[in-house]
Image (tube, rainbow, N blue to C red):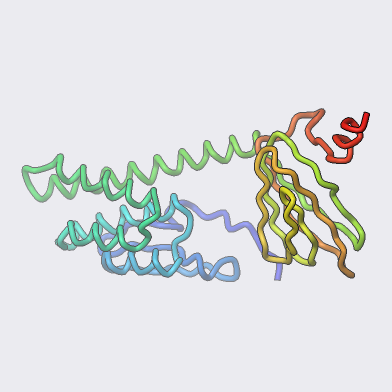
Length: 239
């Protein structure tokens, strides 16, 4: 089955309704677009914990909506914040969103209606601001980042080298040996390899079948002198 670009509007990914938060269940992608309705902050936390929501930006927005839903339902907001924060303790966007929403609550102390209005306005701002940041990141990524596929038949290799940019390798299928700073690893489909700036690395397809991977480079390499091959260094040293 071929994959397709979903082209979803932001509100189809996560949105706040009167009595629930509605999420696109990312566990079902790309085969199906299924919505997951959460009726409380605890259910939003469960969705985050179960990986129905993935990616730092989406997690932060979902948590903010979960907090706003708790406010609309009259839940204990300190307890709601605790439940949401515990769903993914290492998620920076989640903690930041909860702090920002809780701040909007503290700013409105005169009446419950004002508290709720501030929370809703802040949540909407968070979502819009995240969308703008994502769009900017996409533009910068297109300008400063390259991505391509590599396909080596048996016996093919990329000799050991380094370069002044980072690379990540997402192996699709096959098996090969990867040398990273003098250590040799066996890499198979599903593995990911990262080579930082200056890391000496190479790949060798010593198996019977082809090996394929997706390779990314950031920032884009210069037009000349992007690679330094170890055999060339050795020749220079000998001379």
